[in-house]
Image (cartoon, rainbow, N blue to C red; front, side):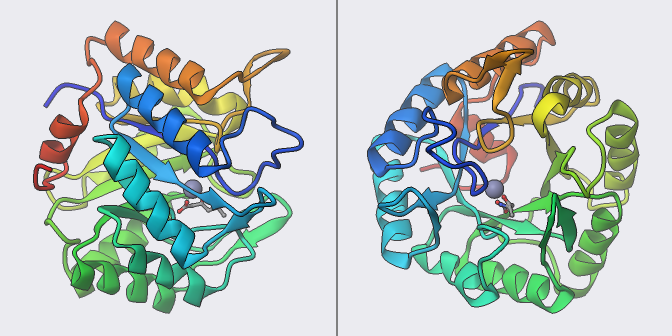
Length: 277
Ligand code: KMH
Ligand code: ZN
């Protein structure tokens, strides 16, 4: 398939609403953002939610309500984050799956994360992967550094393919502590992905100013795109991002220039081996 799968990651767990007023933090803001991003060309929404004080939360009731609202209002593939915030305990991250999302993220290793540490022990990774298999949740494997692709290979060799049988990874590049958001790093990952099961697909996102180099590198290497205010808050020098839609529109433009137009959510489900809705 020659189109581009575009994921929007609209909120994340790192930015504060007080510092970034355009960040969607309420359910209404999230649903409105998701609908507009779908109309522009996004196919997956990668979801982190907030509480009434706009702080990151993994509250099970809110997660269930979020999945239901997004399913009702959009045709997007709803991907819940099991990464949460760096402070979230493992049990709460595993319990994200109780909200029964169609898809969830699954990070392949511990990484320094600015001044913090994003912890992903091997045993925790195995727990998350196997529970996702048991519950029929499709995985997106988050890769913050090259070696995490080797961890993914070891995981698949020992514990089998994800639910649905298709392997999809997301390269999260440019995190302070992880791999850089460069063409060279993306090409190194693309080479390592060749050692994963045939047909493995990848998307990539570059944090901060690496967003554009990573988008261009991913498109030219046959990869897909993730954009959004979880990853990028500056549109260009001196210009704060106005909305997630602005970032999705730019990604759609780049994909069209590359003659790889955005996939609809239905086409994305086909690409990822997921049943039609
Ligand atoms: N917020 C980061 C600590 C994921 O969503 O799976 C983890 C993260 C990865 O964003
Ligand atoms: Zn995330």
